[in-house]
Length: 81
Image (cartoon, rainbow, N blue to C red; front, side):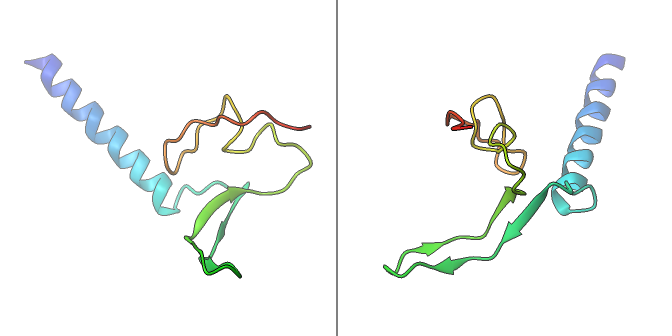
């Protein structure tokens, strides 16, 4: 019974911490948001969060070995530099 209570408390704590991070109160200062826009060919690009430019691609969300904390997607691209 104690194990079940501990597991429930752990899940609730982890969920609250993740919600705080995603809501912006624990936001990452090395990222920025981009507003949605329409390309010249008429394709709509939805708003997104990206890492700030810094001269390397190794810390970008889409680079292999990294995970996007906002979507949970795993990076798959090989960095060019």
